[in-house]
Image (cartoon, rainbow, N blue to C red):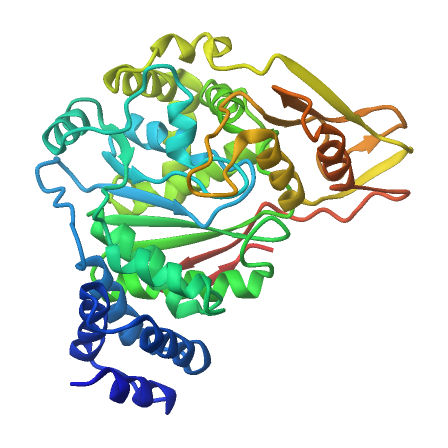
Length: 442
């Protein structure tokens, strides 16, 4: 078997077998197939696509390129969720304790962020003392005892995906549905969950800018999960504006705690309940989404979900007092406000622009080795559709220094568009994708 023959085969639009795909992935990881040949193969996929079976085979080859996690020591069916990324997306901090509170075990591996703000692990590390590394046996024991553990990803989890993604990033082959889908699902499958719920974002603050693109990606990922025997569903959600009001690590933990108290933003609570409900149905905890939502709202408003979050923080060495005193989280010493310059209605908020502004304040990483400031970020005061008058505060910047502040303020202010007429509303939840196909909600 030769790499050049397989590149030619894919270039000509033919399907590759599992053994052929596995040969390419193994050879690339071992260094016997060079970057230039894998670049050519990725470009051939970019133009010719892959069949459902090919995409599933690529996913499994990458999933088994390094460590895999056997979650069988944990009792019951294990659920996981994944978001394709967005601004203000702190859903894992809410969904994980929420589903654990109704008896669904969550054994989750998450990553650090590169870009707008930190990933789930960065947000958790803003909690004083909290450990995001646990020995495997302690990880299993904690989930069996309290129903939830969240740790950083293993250094050798899906090494083929890490290597291939870095190559795609510099060869203009990132925007390929089969390659994106297999990248996401290889990590989820290697992490061992029985049921996977995907939150696929669309809009100005998301990688997939249109609903149609998001649905195509979601369908590809659900197909992969189904093909390899994992129960999988996806929710298409709006990222045309930030989720909730908080952008930045400790700020987002604070908002997550408020939501677990039943006092969070309506959009954030709605999305978390929906994601958690699909996890409940996929694991067989409930027979219907409606029954799951009822159970989950009870857990949210009774304090059971917050109690589960508190137990999780304590189990991983964090200061559990933050569940009742979020002011103990890191706080920036100064806030600077952005104000409306005219009367009208908020017509749009460019989520990506606000995310980049938060990153420049120190809430995210432009480079992998950048150090995050957990205390900084942005708090919105207005959302799309709200009326404003000149002088109203649109957002507060939480800052630690004045370096480059004027340019960041201008960038954040530019993210808001004010119109003279109320805008047409856009729903938060757009589509549900399951093994049965796509259900559009609006």
